[in-house]
Structure formats: structure tokens, C-alpha cells
Length: 404
Ligand SMILES: [Zn+2]
Image (cartoon, rainbow, N blue to C red; front, side, top):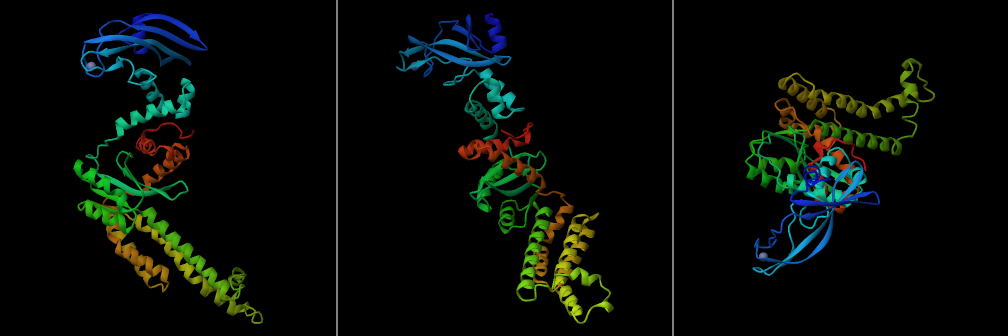
């Protein structure tokens, strides 16, 4: 081992190699400071007096899977100018850290490919050591996210955990990166984002959101020039929810008000030739009842299939025709749920059709939300909210499976 290898291999510069020891599988290099050029760490003065040493051990780059330690007697100096008594500043390690800067860089590098647990296991250090190193690095990179380049974004909220905790997430649709995480949901959660966006003077062209009143108001107020695009997944999902409600209502109606056997055996009755319907068992009346009961549901199912076609047209005029036709059919169905839904679509038709100018959606956020939930299940989501947020900002560059 040489002083030069100490520098090139382990990033320890300005220290002389003294000896190597092997202790319980760990390699320990003892080094000593090369010069007596000591300064006061508080004021920088050279007018200092040595006040003894304190032996410290620093984790540094491993040799293979074998941990390596640097052992150094760190001088303490008393300053004649400012009166402080402190340990001198070390070139190879940040103040108060028990590992070298090279070790930190290595942890960051491994963290691009491995989970915290894997890195900790490989380097024989605690989970918290890796986490702290990651957190400082993430915080350097993501505490001031650049927003100036943003053009197309998606906004959505995500519920995490069981305690009705919500996060509002803004995604850059060009890079797939999360650019903002707000606490809670609704317009308030976005306030800090608008502020930062204003400072950055970003020229946002289009925003994908669901049809919620809060988001529409927030975007119209803060980005009056941006084009609103209502996410089609949310619209289809909303319709499916209404359809389930309708199905449940009709089922209750059928079981409460009418005989339970109205729906039972309907298929058999439908398959029967009408002339062969048995008058004695009132099959004709039962068939009529069943068809009447099922009619709203059948209409709703047809409209469900047709709704998707709004986003499958070759151009905007064609889509507009399909949408207007859908609204007209739903309005004239006589079914309250469909009439209400038609009105909702009519009010939001511009944002729906804007899809043909900006074919964006909150779809890419779905994948991000799945990853956020996995992160959250890794427990540190709640223990350290700040770290959790930083990890969300780094999600798009995560290359390993999010487990552990
Ligand atoms: Zn001083």
C-alpha cells in the first residue's frame, strides 16, 4: 500500500499511509496528516495551537465485498483569534460524517441500480446510513426543480395508505418526471406549484386533468393561456361508476317493488318464440316486465361502448360529431343518470375535444402513482415525509424493481 494508491484508489489525499490491519473481516488503513499546516475550522486563522487528537474511523470504498476503514488521529486545535477549540476540517470527509466522500459517491452510484436494503447489505452498513446519504444527494438535486422548460403537464391526486392521506402530483409529460408533490388534494395543494411556476416563467401549453371543478378553476386562474384537456380515462371511469350505481338502483327496485322472479328466467323467456309463451304462467307479462326493467341498463351499456369512440376519431370535427350525437342520445333516453352525464359532457365538451389538439392524458401519472404506492409501502414514506417526497422526484430515473 502506498500513499499514491491511497489517493487514486480510495480518494484520500494529503495523508500519509502508515499501516494496514485486518480486524474481523475489515481492512483498516491507518493514515496521518502530511503537513502541520493547521487552520482554525471556525475562522480560518493559522494562529492555532494543537490541543491533542481524537482517533476517528471512516468507512471508505470496499475492496470487493470487504469493508475498508480509514483510521486517523484527527488533531484538535485551539484558536488564538476566535478562541474556538475544534477538530480540524478533513479533506476526504464531510464534517461529522463517519464515512468518506468517495464512499458517499459510491453509495449514490449503487443506489441507481439497487434498493437501500441491497446497498446497505453489500457495504455492511446500516439502512439509515444509506438513507441519509441518499437523502442529502436527492435534496441537493431536487430541492429546486427547474420548471422553465415545462410545456405539457398532467395533474392528479393520489390517495396513499389507509388514513385518507392525499398527495397532489404534477408530471412533466415530456420527461415523465414528477415536478411537484403537494400535500393534500384540491386547489390548495397546488398553490406552491403556481408560485414556483410563476417565478420560473414557464410557458405551459396544455394541462391534462380530470373534470373536477377545483382543478379547472385553479388552472384557468393560474394558467389562463394553457389549453385544458380532460383526461379520457377519468371520463370513462366516471361513466362506469355511474353505470354501477344505475345497475344497483335497478336491482334494488326489481327486488323491492316487484316480484323477485321478474329477472329470474328472463333469458329463457327471451329465447322462447313469442307465440309459445305460456299464458297460464303469465310468461308474456313477465317477459314484458323483464324487458322494461332491463331497457335502461341496455341503453346505458350501448352508450358506454359508444363513449370510447369519442377518442378514436381521425380528427376533431369527426370527434365532435360523435360527442354531440352521444349527448343527444343520452339526453333523449329518459334515464336520469344518462341525462345528467350528458350535461356534464356538454359543459366540458371543449376540454374533451381539445384532446385532438393536444393528445395528452393523465395516463402516464397512473404508472407513477403505482410506484408511489410501492414506495409508501416500504415504510419510510410516513416516517420521513421529506425523504418520501424526494424519492418521488427521483422515481423516473429508478432502474431497479421497487422492492425492499
Ligand atoms: Zn478561529
